[in-house]
Length: 210
Image (cartoon, rainbow, N blue to C red; front, top):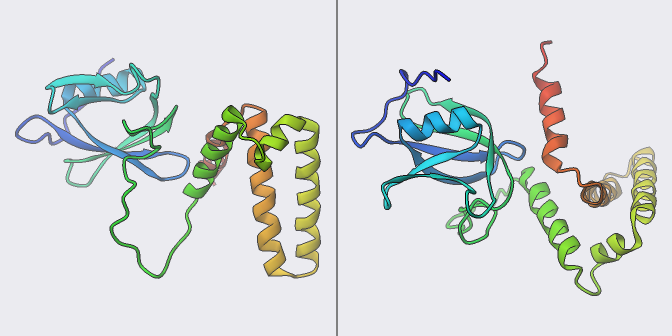
């Protein structure tokens, strides 16, 4: 495959920083470096390859851990000297086992905007509950009761959302919608359907020619 790197401005060491971002949530997962060879491997294979500055060698993300990153797209900035790589992660991005390498908050304003990344965090927690089944956890109860119980809860919460909206009760609507989203995520887990696939459908619809 002929991959054009003419517009990429690699630094004096032949590297370019790559900001890796979850394509579904927008969450920044990690920052790594690519050289020309790893960039071409990434574009050619559809999975992230980086250049290790400490080991001075190429490495394929997830080669040993299985936590690969399927590339959705790679975008060059206006100066041509940095990349944003949007991916669908198959597991944690950080070597510590955390979903993202960015976990130590050093500043937060009083205006706390809640982003869609909370859905991804909740999806991961639900997956953990499914795997470990801790005693006494409500999510464990749902999985052990099975799909019929989960579907019943999704139906109940959908009805509660409708009632709250019909009553013009914004406070109740807020809570009932949160309950519906949670139970929908449990259902997706039970059906082995990643949230990223659902978000991908929304993105595809959004990007259709108007």
